[in-house]
Length: 169
Image 1 (cartoon, rainbow, N blue to C red):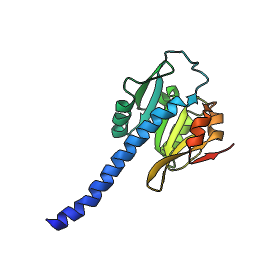
Image 2: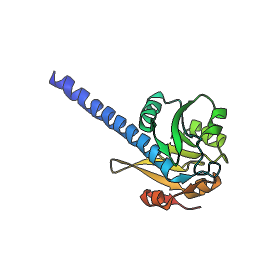
Image 3: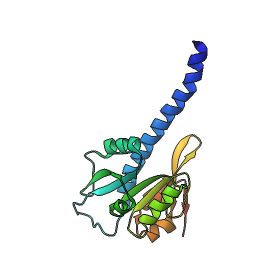
Image 4: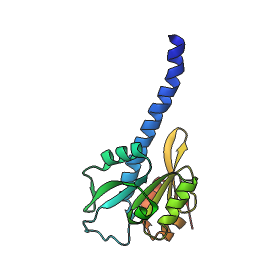
């Protein structure tokens, strides 16, 4: 019994850490929306801020719970599951998961020039504006100001100041 317990504990701890990490990322995405200005949605508009997630139902459920009933600058937040590249064109925030994957590259390309904040895991790959990184057992993020400029997004200096690293254009 003790051997079984020892074998299961590390996996449970990793699963718990992973779930906590996913929850932290959902909260970060919500907070990113507070510190980004989109050129095609002036303050006071009632159009929702569309937060999109392709092919990740567990993360989408966490994000929906996190943003349910939330409003930023008069704009309600909506978490949406994407079913194809064409649907991504209407996203304000697009979470692509592993930023170095071919899928992430396809999603980033689909929204290039569309005023979409692209967020991924691990690296500031081409087209990714914000990348989540693990730094000393914490979830942190890096920002690529050049990619933000290409998307015509204005990122608050307050958010830039919280980043682990900011890559200038």
